[in-house]
Image (cartoon, rainbow, N blue to C red; front, side, top):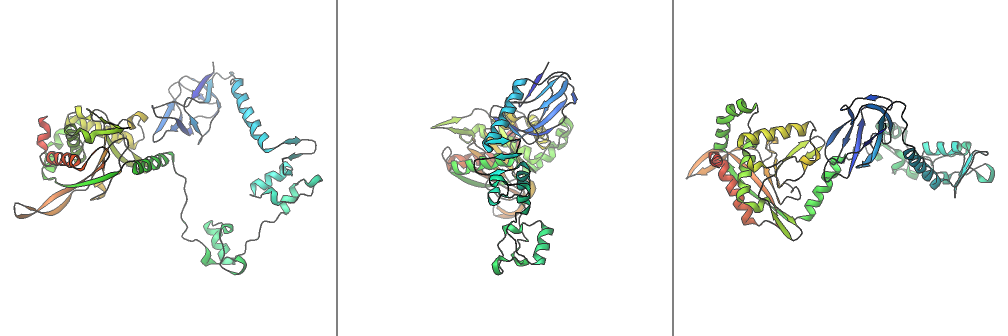
Length: 427
């Protein structure tokens, strides 16, 4: 029995997926549960398993193709099974439509193709296509002006004038001289005309495109402002050191300052719900729960996986949840739904030595917290000069939802927890 392989809808917002790589070739036998192909959605790479055992009869879509969800991309079945004729006919019809758009008639006897404007043999068209020659610039020598192979071969592209040195450097660097305007007589190109410091152009990945789109929408949609507040991290550091061995013994995970910040943030959000809200038209939706997103940077871009119901977790449970989602993000083992539904986001650049930044809100959140590096600074305390481990918190807010006073009160609450972490454990 023939079984369709479809592009799955792996998340409520998923509209299409791109095939990264088929793991099997046509004709290969695939066991049920075996990885058949890898796809990428807006931000997540996913491995798709075979739903049944059988031979990969046909690939309808190939590596690099972007396909709408619930679209058939291939077929599994027994060796003697045939791909449904209707699918083949659709593909053939599509090819015929594409051909009919380019050519108005085919004369196999004379071995040439006639279009509305240009008559040329297939061989002439192939050479022109491979050589990037516009057939409208070629004069045909065949019957009724038909362009033949020899006409294309004899067609001379505009001569590019350059010095031998410029030509040699261009060949070595892969520089297209036809795109350069020379400064010499009649456009002659010299070494000085070459863009030797030319930038490398690479296509944006799907992930990068989505990040660019969403950050642009966020930046131009929400009127934002950022509040900065310095925190004395002396007691948080002591707290981490005191519980480190216990947490390691209980969970096998190393507790970090980030874990303490996440826990303190969750506690603060429950006391200041407007910072945990979102805008829906002319209504403000105030959440009575915290779905905490953690911004994680990868070589390919930024992901914001969500720790759901973080407000219900003990400190130990939050450490486990944070470590789990960080590890699975770095190995690209997240589901699309784990990147949705956040109510607030934390972005920590402290490990890179960053001391202050203005994070962009992760829509549809109304706020995002930027966490910075801990630095030893000279501070005044009760008239005495001391050196203390200080950290700056940067809170970016959507001014449509949150005013400065509300944001300031939230930061003060968070500062209180971080400077007195034992209070967080009281409930």
